[in-house]
Image (cartoon, rainbow, N blue to C red; front, side, top):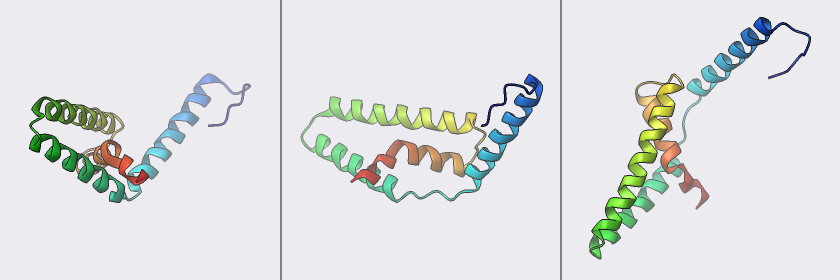
Length: 103
């Protein structure tokens, strides 16, 4: 987003809106790679299974709740950004579990 101090505010707002729409369209058109998210979900699943195995049910509830809230917030953000349907779910899944790429 370039800034020209001499252009009128209305022109600047139109230009910014066009740039945001262009970046949103590019983001929607891009394919989503979920490899790292699958790894992150697998790690969380194994951790929840181990916590259940050792009888730490409160910890299972806390960890599950944190990830559920994280996913719900990411899904709300995706819907607010204009995504709907499967693409919104994929984006929320990648935001929630995409940290698995770091392993």
